Image (cartoon, rainbow, N blue to C red):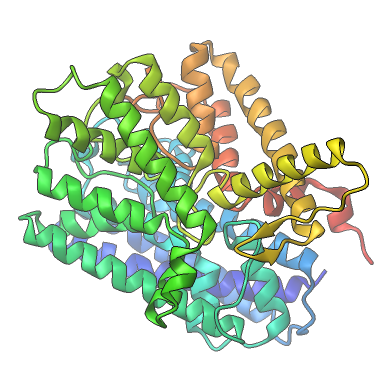
Length: 482
């Protein structure tokens, strides 16, 4: 195990985390928020000390880096990043419990948006900014940022780290070099975020609120700056957010192909068409189901479109209390929690790409049962899908179901309703945010025990990192010398 290389990466990631914490410190200084200033300064000092020690101990790290080390490195870095990133919440005493603070920042970095804060508007501006920015940093991935914009070179570990951190069944290259691919993806991410901020400001949203909301939208996170999420904002602002939530749920490779004028490849993308089809179908069904709950058809469609976009992209914003909707509409939202967004996006969930592969594999297996001698291959966008990818997809689904039921069983010890616990499990493991019943859009997760919060935090990390980088940390084979 190349511990020195992993230590060097950890030092660099912590340094990046500290640098990105500086704007939050400046905001707290500007508004005279002394408790938050203390929290950020102490955290920056801790980060500087850890990064300096690791850099000193890990000099001359060998360049060899395999897939096992890539998985371990990503899992450990996200855990340490969360353990340190929650310190401003805890030191400032704006979240007095360290477990609660850890839950909140894990929810931020994993772009979940589940919160334990009962009164969001009571938080200081600097803390609110850091809380929302954690979505943006975690959305595309901190290691993707490191590989895109630092001087790190080396095809081997670049591919292993990107595969371990990036969402979806497979990581491909847009250009020959993975580092350039990471840079292109982040550039698209930044541009879309800036456009989102501009459109929100045009709609008279205050700048700091617009930036925080755009961070949550871009990272498909969902931490709001108001207690009612986006419910009190104008229809224009809600519609802008709906559009951008859906845009950030699209595979970013589609944007690159669109920019280089390969429009046929984008329009013919099977995952994109299924993603948009699910969205449009869900909006139509929910609109018909809730048509009597709102005064006008426009308002009905707006709320239906917003919540469908928010749930399938795993953003978690809300414009209305959808826990009051009929059972049919809530069932659709529960299904969307599992489906999630596209692979290669900032969204969570099972991913539309995996759903597509599972459907095609099921169809192939049925055909083979009926025609045992017939050889049928699975294709996606006209290209043959390797059996290795199909096996990995099946393994992911098996691990997904085992972890889902394990989390659900453990948190059931707290005695809440099945609806509460099931939706809490789904919305944290799939990185969505609000659930139903006691964890609905007008409630929060503060009522769960410390054990349940730790388990749910672990679930959020496992869901964001596609399960395996977290699971390998608990395998004895991972730590054996080879």
